[in-house]
Image (cartoon, rainbow, N blue to C red; front, top):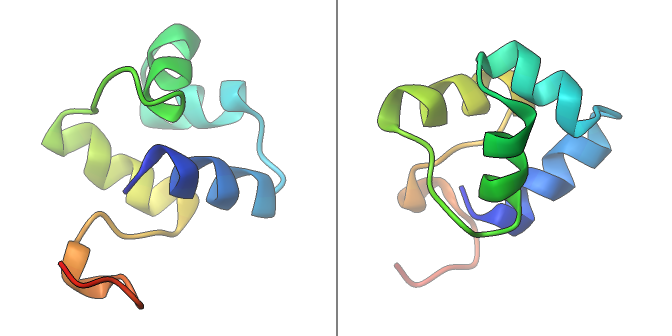
Length: 67
């Protein structure tokens, strides 16, 4: 999941960065860093993000990409 996708899904679900950080179990600073593109979540946290945000980190699930 790209930082742009994280932000879009978060805002579409009317969640704050704090909401997502708490649900995933990370600091708000860590989540903000991911959403800003300054770092990447671990595989475990990426899976939690998918559950919380309702997205997918699997590139093959993305429509319109040539990856």
